[in-house]
Length: 77
Image (cartoon, rainbow, N blue to C red; front, side):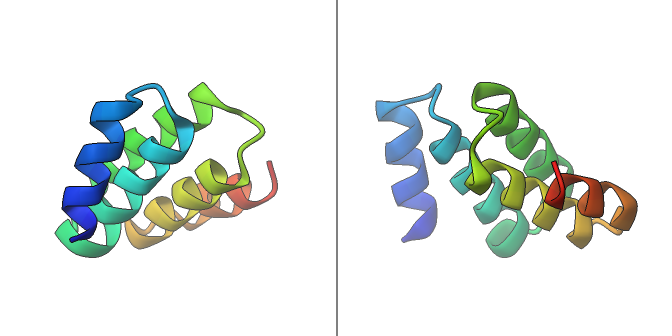
């Protein structure tokens, strides 16, 4: 269900930081495609540098991929 909803959100608002962060979360937690998760989360941050959701998605994806230093930096940006 989450994958379908993210697809719909991206279709409706492809430049939404929240939609990109949601995609990153699905890639991290459902599909376990960590490279794609980091890419989506970084895109979310680029779209809205003030979005806590985007930064949290980036930290989560980096932590899951073993990039603890990058995850900590993302949490404190």
